[in-house]
Length: 468
Image (cartoon, rainbow, N blue to C red; front, side):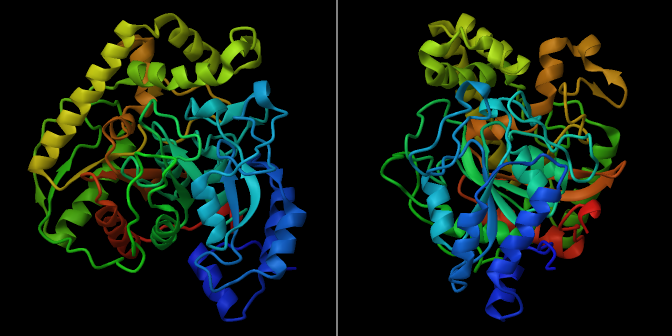
């Protein structure tokens, strides 16, 4: 019996082309692995269709024959379109998201739908619809959210690659918690069409991947303008082809593990400092002190993100409140109460201030390095962590800032639109630690090559130890 593929997706395509294995064998192995898994990372399997496609897969395509996961919040025609919520548990998509269609056109066999947090609202994948998704590195720990199922499925050996979306850290946070590569591109790099929301202007699409080259190839096939998303950018060619060609020597870098907005664990700080110091020494970077002056922005992010959800719920709200997870119910009630003109002004001021602060920072440096998450993964069932190194943040900071600490390292890039990547840089208590590198707008290639430098010098496990 063929085992599930535990190398990266590019290696799988190479194996297909060399005649070492057939796509149908790998798809069947993925189906078997999903059936045997206790991660609860998959909520729908389109197995018969996938096996049929695998029979005639065109392995000359970039992802020809690769079994892939699709995040529950992404639309795939004919698949459930639940938003990870009991409210829409019976809905079926009648269209496919543009970037998902492009991924499929590049040869990916869309095998399974991966679990997500309800409406993408939290960084813990635990819903009333599906229950808790587990981290393959340590069962009963969260893989993060909202792309937690994608991260667990890829790191857990179920599929080599899966789609993800990042509106407040929802690619980078799970990547950091599960030892994967997670790139959030510049806002607009990958189109949000069709039916692209105008607000809250924070969401970017991407993938959860085991390697830098898989991430680059995914961006190659999915980026590019679509007229149904007027904010999407023209296509950029050759991310994978240009890997390793960026001149990395003598860059200016700010190393701010807590980004000035988060309380982080000492083990996380040390791992990020060590990885950053290795990069600085390797490439002769100039370390520059920068005062970012950012604020957490959790309240502004939450209100702005919940307003489109209220619009989606329409007349179902507030009668549907009891069907929602407590976190989503709390956020929607707050947005319903506080979503006033004054709140919109406050959100706009926060957005403008964050954009200005990030722009000023990148006048002084080429990169900013910080942690991806404040700590290692917390419990799979939640609640979201409000302690760091045994310190009760509720008592020291208050409830709002304590909860906001979970996204304090990632939300700024969603607000400003800057690209950022999470790179595995170590472990603590058997759970991965991610380092986040942030770049100026449109510098995804720089981030990919920085990640490639780390990958070559400090290679990480492609899947969790329990999956090997």
